[in-house]
Length: 73
Image (cartoon, rainbow, N blue to C red; front, side, top):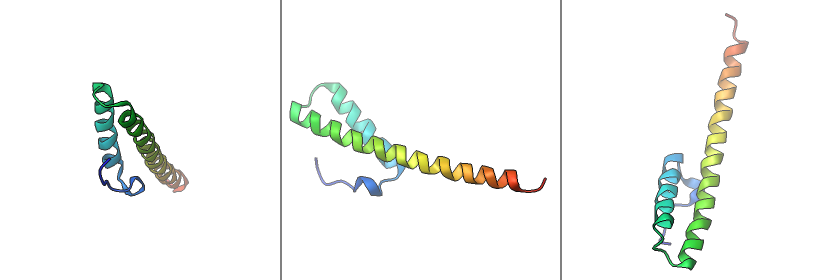
C-alpha cells in the first residue's frame, strides 16, 4: 500500500473512509490474493481505530451525562 497517514493519528471519518474504500476493493474481487490479505489486515486495523474512537466518544458523553445528573435542578 502507498504511504498513508498513520492509523493511530486518523480521525474517525478518515479511518471510516479508508475502510469503506478497502471494502469496495475487496468486494470487487479484482485484487490478487496477497493484496487481498494485506487489505484485510489494514481493514482490521482501521476497524479497531474506529471502535476506539467511538468508545472514547461514548465515555465523554457518559461523563457529560453524569455531570448533568449531579447538578441541582
